[in-house]
Length: 288
Image (cartoon, rainbow, N blue to C red; front, side, top):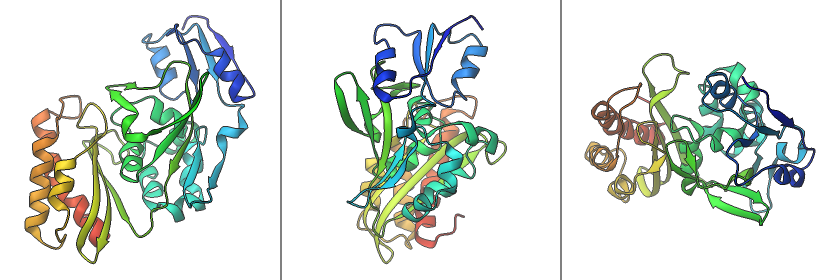
Protein backbone atom coordinates (compact mmCIF):
# COMPACT_ATOMS: atom_id res chain seq x y z
CA UNK A 1 0.00 0.00 0.00
CA UNK A 2 1.15 3.54 -0.71
CA UNK A 3 1.42 6.04 2.20
CA UNK A 4 -1.68 8.02 3.10
CA UNK A 5 -2.91 10.44 5.74
CA UNK A 6 -5.08 9.03 8.55
CA UNK A 7 -7.29 11.59 10.28
CA UNK A 8 -9.11 10.70 13.50
CA UNK A 9 -11.71 13.38 14.32
CA UNK A 10 -13.55 13.26 17.63
CA UNK A 11 -16.82 14.79 16.41
CA UNK A 12 -19.12 14.43 13.44
CA UNK A 13 -18.66 18.05 12.36
CA UNK A 14 -14.88 17.65 12.37
CA UNK A 15 -15.16 14.51 10.26
CA UNK A 16 -17.31 16.20 7.63
CA UNK A 17 -14.86 19.10 7.34
CA UNK A 18 -12.05 16.63 6.59
CA UNK A 19 -13.90 15.11 3.64
CA UNK A 20 -13.47 16.50 0.12
CA UNK A 21 -16.42 16.29 -2.28
CA UNK A 22 -14.08 16.81 -5.26
CA UNK A 23 -11.42 14.23 -4.38
CA UNK A 24 -12.25 10.54 -4.72
CA UNK A 25 -8.99 9.68 -2.91
CA UNK A 26 -10.38 11.09 0.35
CA UNK A 27 -12.81 8.73 2.06
CA UNK A 28 -14.27 7.98 5.47
CA UNK A 29 -13.41 4.63 7.04
CA UNK A 30 -15.62 2.85 9.56
CA UNK A 31 -14.72 -0.78 10.31
CA UNK A 32 -12.59 -1.00 7.19
CA UNK A 33 -13.28 -4.70 6.52
CA UNK A 34 -14.00 -4.04 2.83
CA UNK A 35 -11.93 -0.91 2.28
CA UNK A 36 -8.71 -2.47 3.57
CA UNK A 37 -9.09 -5.38 1.15
CA UNK A 38 -9.54 -2.91 -1.70
CA UNK A 39 -6.40 -1.07 -0.61
CA UNK A 40 -4.32 -4.23 -0.34
CA UNK A 41 -5.45 -5.26 -3.82
CA UNK A 42 -4.54 -1.84 -5.20
CA UNK A 43 -8.12 -1.15 -6.26
CA UNK A 44 -8.25 1.95 -4.06
CA UNK A 45 -5.26 4.19 -3.27
CA UNK A 46 -6.30 6.78 -0.68
CA UNK A 47 -4.72 10.16 -0.12
CA UNK A 48 -6.58 10.55 3.18
CA UNK A 49 -8.77 8.29 5.27
CA UNK A 50 -11.06 9.89 7.84
CA UNK A 51 -11.58 7.41 10.66
CA UNK A 52 -14.97 7.55 12.39
CA UNK A 53 -14.01 5.30 15.31
CA UNK A 54 -13.64 8.07 17.89
CA UNK A 55 -17.09 9.62 17.25
CA UNK A 56 -19.07 8.25 20.18
CA UNK A 57 -22.40 9.73 19.12
CA UNK A 58 -22.45 7.29 16.18
CA UNK A 59 -22.43 4.19 18.44
CA UNK A 60 -25.76 4.64 20.23
CA UNK A 61 -28.75 2.27 19.90
CA UNK A 62 -31.92 3.89 21.25
CA UNK A 63 -35.69 3.54 21.08
CA UNK A 64 -37.34 6.78 19.96
CA UNK A 65 -40.61 8.23 21.35
CA UNK A 66 -42.59 6.98 18.31
CA UNK A 67 -41.37 3.43 18.91
CA UNK A 68 -38.75 3.45 16.15
CA UNK A 69 -35.29 2.03 16.80
CA UNK A 70 -32.31 4.25 15.95
CA UNK A 71 -29.03 2.41 15.36
CA UNK A 72 -25.85 4.49 15.27
CA UNK A 73 -23.84 4.06 12.09
CA UNK A 74 -20.65 3.05 13.93
CA UNK A 75 -22.34 0.23 15.83
CA UNK A 76 -20.37 -2.98 15.18
CA UNK A 77 -22.47 -5.76 13.68
CA UNK A 78 -21.67 -8.08 16.59
CA UNK A 79 -22.96 -5.47 19.07
CA UNK A 80 -26.17 -5.15 17.06
CA UNK A 81 -26.46 -8.94 16.96
CA UNK A 82 -26.39 -9.16 20.76
CA UNK A 83 -28.46 -6.05 21.49
CA UNK A 84 -31.69 -6.95 23.37
CA UNK A 85 -33.59 -3.88 22.13
CA UNK A 86 -32.89 -4.84 18.53
CA UNK A 87 -33.93 -8.44 19.16
CA UNK A 88 -37.23 -7.28 20.69
CA UNK A 89 -37.85 -4.68 17.99
CA UNK A 90 -37.02 -6.77 14.91
CA UNK A 91 -35.80 -10.31 15.63
CA UNK A 92 -35.19 -10.83 11.92
CA UNK A 93 -32.15 -8.52 12.22
CA UNK A 94 -30.65 -10.69 14.97
CA UNK A 95 -31.31 -13.88 13.01
CA UNK A 96 -29.80 -12.42 9.85
CA UNK A 97 -26.60 -11.32 11.58
CA UNK A 98 -25.91 -14.83 12.86
CA UNK A 99 -25.10 -16.01 9.32
CA UNK A 100 -23.56 -12.77 8.05
CA UNK A 101 -19.92 -13.57 7.25
CA UNK A 102 -18.16 -14.69 10.47
CA UNK A 103 -17.78 -13.37 14.00
CA UNK A 104 -14.33 -11.89 13.30
CA UNK A 105 -15.80 -9.69 10.57
CA UNK A 106 -18.90 -8.84 12.62
CA UNK A 107 -16.70 -7.69 15.51
CA UNK A 108 -15.14 -5.02 13.27
CA UNK A 109 -17.64 -4.20 10.51
CA UNK A 110 -20.19 -1.46 11.27
CA UNK A 111 -23.79 -0.86 10.30
CA UNK A 112 -23.06 2.37 8.42
CA UNK A 113 -20.07 0.95 6.58
CA UNK A 114 -22.07 -2.14 5.65
CA UNK A 115 -24.65 0.07 3.94
CA UNK A 116 -22.33 2.70 2.44
CA UNK A 117 -20.15 0.07 0.75
CA UNK A 118 -23.21 -0.86 -1.39
CA UNK A 119 -22.08 -4.37 -2.23
CA UNK A 120 -25.30 -6.00 -3.51
CA UNK A 121 -24.38 -9.26 -1.75
CA UNK A 122 -24.70 -7.73 1.74
CA UNK A 123 -27.34 -9.36 3.95
CA UNK A 124 -28.69 -6.44 6.00
CA UNK A 125 -29.89 -4.06 3.22
CA UNK A 126 -32.80 -6.23 1.98
CA UNK A 127 -33.86 -6.91 5.56
CA UNK A 128 -33.82 -3.24 6.56
CA UNK A 129 -35.63 -2.22 3.36
CA UNK A 130 -38.33 -4.80 4.05
CA UNK A 131 -38.69 -3.33 7.55
CA UNK A 132 -39.24 0.15 6.08
CA UNK A 133 -36.01 1.63 7.46
CA UNK A 134 -34.53 4.97 6.53
CA UNK A 135 -31.08 6.42 7.14
CA UNK A 136 -30.06 9.71 8.70
CA UNK A 137 -27.33 11.46 6.71
CA UNK A 138 -25.28 14.53 7.59
CA UNK A 139 -23.13 16.71 5.35
CA UNK A 140 -21.98 20.35 5.05
CA UNK A 141 -25.51 21.41 4.08
CA UNK A 142 -27.01 19.80 7.18
CA UNK A 143 -29.00 16.65 7.90
CA UNK A 144 -31.44 14.75 5.71
CA UNK A 145 -33.19 11.39 5.72
CA UNK A 146 -33.26 8.87 2.89
CA UNK A 147 -35.51 5.81 2.62
CA UNK A 148 -33.07 2.93 2.61
CA UNK A 149 -34.47 1.56 -0.63
CA UNK A 150 -33.48 4.86 -2.29
CA UNK A 151 -29.86 4.76 -1.04
CA UNK A 152 -28.49 2.35 -3.61
CA UNK A 153 -27.88 3.74 -7.10
CA UNK A 154 -26.25 0.67 -8.66
CA UNK A 155 -23.45 -1.83 -8.28
CA UNK A 156 -21.29 -0.49 -5.41
CA UNK A 157 -22.96 2.91 -5.84
CA UNK A 158 -25.05 5.06 -3.51
CA UNK A 159 -26.72 8.48 -3.77
CA UNK A 160 -24.48 9.88 -1.01
CA UNK A 161 -22.20 12.81 -1.78
CA UNK A 162 -18.51 12.29 -0.98
CA UNK A 163 -18.77 14.67 1.98
CA UNK A 164 -21.90 13.09 3.47
CA UNK A 165 -21.92 10.48 6.22
CA UNK A 166 -24.57 8.01 7.35
CA UNK A 167 -25.15 8.75 11.04
CA UNK A 168 -27.93 6.30 11.89
CA UNK A 169 -30.35 3.71 10.60
CA UNK A 170 -33.91 4.13 11.85
CA UNK A 171 -36.23 1.12 11.86
CA UNK A 172 -39.88 2.06 12.45
CA UNK A 173 -42.07 0.26 14.94
CA UNK A 174 -43.16 -3.03 13.38
CA UNK A 175 -46.41 -3.65 15.22
CA UNK A 176 -47.57 -7.17 14.48
CA UNK A 177 -45.73 -7.55 11.16
CA UNK A 178 -43.84 -10.77 10.52
CA UNK A 179 -40.48 -10.63 8.81
CA UNK A 180 -38.18 -13.33 7.44
CA UNK A 181 -34.84 -13.35 5.62
CA UNK A 182 -33.70 -16.36 3.60
CA UNK A 183 -30.50 -16.64 1.62
CA UNK A 184 -29.13 -19.20 -0.76
CA UNK A 185 -25.37 -19.67 -0.71
CA UNK A 186 -23.33 -21.83 -3.04
CA UNK A 187 -20.92 -22.84 -0.28
CA UNK A 188 -21.04 -22.33 3.53
CA UNK A 189 -24.08 -20.78 5.22
CA UNK A 190 -22.15 -17.62 6.15
CA UNK A 191 -20.77 -17.11 2.63
CA UNK A 192 -21.85 -14.48 0.11
CA UNK A 193 -25.38 -15.29 -1.00
CA UNK A 194 -26.33 -16.06 -4.58
CA UNK A 195 -29.72 -14.67 -3.53
CA UNK A 196 -31.13 -12.98 -0.46
CA UNK A 197 -34.89 -12.61 0.06
CA UNK A 198 -36.48 -10.53 2.80
CA UNK A 199 -40.21 -10.29 3.36
CA UNK A 200 -42.23 -8.28 5.87
CA UNK A 201 -45.95 -8.99 6.07
CA UNK A 202 -49.01 -7.56 7.76
CA UNK A 203 -51.22 -10.62 8.16
CA UNK A 204 -54.79 -11.31 9.16
CA UNK A 205 -54.51 -14.99 9.93
CA UNK A 206 -53.08 -16.38 6.68
CA UNK A 207 -54.38 -13.46 4.57
CA UNK A 208 -51.94 -10.75 3.48
CA UNK A 209 -53.13 -7.21 4.14
CA UNK A 210 -49.83 -5.70 3.06
CA UNK A 211 -46.38 -7.00 2.26
CA UNK A 212 -42.89 -5.95 1.27
CA UNK A 213 -40.71 -8.32 -0.74
CA UNK A 214 -37.05 -7.43 -1.30
CA UNK A 215 -34.27 -9.33 -3.04
CA UNK A 216 -30.52 -8.81 -3.23
CA UNK A 217 -27.33 -10.51 -4.47
CA UNK A 218 -29.09 -11.73 -7.63
CA UNK A 219 -29.45 -8.12 -8.79
CA UNK A 220 -27.15 -5.09 -9.12
CA UNK A 221 -28.64 -3.58 -5.97
CA UNK A 222 -31.26 -4.53 -3.37
CA UNK A 223 -34.70 -4.04 -4.92
CA UNK A 224 -38.32 -4.31 -3.90
CA UNK A 225 -40.57 -6.42 -6.11
CA UNK A 226 -43.88 -4.55 -6.44
CA UNK A 227 -45.29 -7.10 -8.85
CA UNK A 228 -44.77 -9.91 -6.38
CA UNK A 229 -46.14 -7.74 -3.57
CA UNK A 230 -49.28 -7.09 -5.61
CA UNK A 231 -49.60 -10.80 -6.47
CA UNK A 232 -49.73 -11.80 -2.82
CA UNK A 233 -51.75 -8.86 -1.43
CA UNK A 234 -55.22 -10.00 -0.43
CA UNK A 235 -54.30 -13.65 -0.87
CA UNK A 236 -53.84 -16.38 1.71
CA UNK A 237 -50.38 -17.77 2.30
CA UNK A 238 -51.74 -21.25 3.01
CA UNK A 239 -52.89 -21.35 -0.62
CA UNK A 240 -50.22 -22.87 -2.87
CA UNK A 241 -51.64 -21.02 -5.88
CA UNK A 242 -50.99 -17.67 -4.19
CA UNK A 243 -47.41 -18.65 -3.37
CA UNK A 244 -46.78 -19.83 -6.94
CA UNK A 245 -48.27 -16.63 -8.33
CA UNK A 246 -45.99 -14.51 -6.14
CA UNK A 247 -42.91 -16.57 -7.03
CA UNK A 248 -43.66 -16.37 -10.75
CA UNK A 249 -44.24 -12.61 -10.54
CA UNK A 250 -40.96 -12.15 -8.67
CA UNK A 251 -39.00 -14.16 -11.25
CA UNK A 252 -40.63 -12.21 -14.06
CA UNK A 253 -39.73 -8.76 -12.74
CA UNK A 254 -36.31 -9.47 -11.19
CA UNK A 255 -33.45 -8.23 -13.39
CA UNK A 256 -30.92 -10.84 -12.35
CA UNK A 257 -27.19 -10.69 -13.06
CA UNK A 258 -24.44 -13.22 -13.69
CA UNK A 259 -21.49 -13.25 -11.28
CA UNK A 260 -19.31 -15.67 -9.36
CA UNK A 261 -22.33 -16.93 -7.43
CA UNK A 262 -24.20 -18.11 -10.52
CA UNK A 263 -25.73 -17.25 -13.87
CA UNK A 264 -28.63 -14.84 -14.35
CA UNK A 265 -30.88 -17.72 -15.42
CA UNK A 266 -29.96 -19.75 -12.33
CA UNK A 267 -30.64 -16.80 -10.07
CA UNK A 268 -33.99 -16.15 -11.72
CA UNK A 269 -35.07 -19.66 -10.79
CA UNK A 270 -33.75 -19.11 -7.25
CA UNK A 271 -35.94 -16.00 -7.02
CA UNK A 272 -39.00 -18.01 -8.08
CA UNK A 273 -38.37 -20.69 -5.43
CA UNK A 274 -37.07 -18.60 -2.54
CA UNK A 275 -39.77 -15.93 -2.67
CA UNK A 276 -42.32 -18.70 -2.20
CA UNK A 277 -40.29 -20.18 0.64
CA UNK A 278 -39.85 -16.84 2.39
CA UNK A 279 -43.57 -16.07 2.22
CA UNK A 280 -44.44 -19.50 3.59
CA UNK A 281 -41.83 -19.11 6.35
CA UNK A 282 -43.34 -15.79 7.39
CA UNK A 283 -46.64 -17.57 7.97
CA UNK A 284 -45.37 -20.74 9.63
CA UNK A 285 -42.16 -19.46 11.21
CA UNK A 286 -40.28 -22.42 9.71
CA UNK A 287 -38.23 -22.04 6.50
CA UNK A 288 -38.61 -25.03 4.16
